[in-house]
Length: 231
Image (cartoon, rainbow, N blue to C red):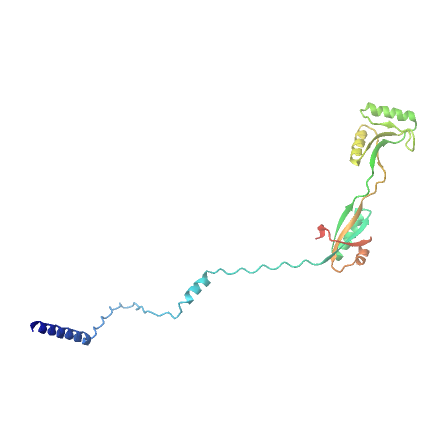
């Protein structure tokens, strides 16, 4: 009986403690400390910016501005090219160039070498007699030269042949050596030797015709592909 009475007493005490805990008054909030005069109280302000905006702003701030696109290169103007000539001299080509350049475009002179000779010979002109020619040949030999011959026939009879050469440069060197020793030698081309000719390579605006260029050039004008110098 005593044990049962103790159990009932403990149950009653627990119920009493629980009832007191549920019915106790809320504790009063402790007052905030007084703020000194002249100091503004801080207040918490809630942010209205959505959380997803912050990363986007950071990305925008760190992204470098894109550089402007480079301007496209202007297209090359269409041109027509011609060949004007031939001119007998460079001076004539330059005169035509002076008429063409300020009018229709650009002209460049070009030299075309003439037909070359098959060789060159060096000689002294004919003497008054064979005796004089022989005496001159002896003087040439005494001066240290060889490869000479007294001519016995033809238009240059009693002249003295002093050598044949494949190039004008070689013949010119021989002539200079003889002239330095006091012998007035001359150089003659063997075969036909044509002079150089000059041409103008012309670049004009598209649509220009050879007939329009003819009065300015003063020589025949023919269309051609644009050479590298005019591209």
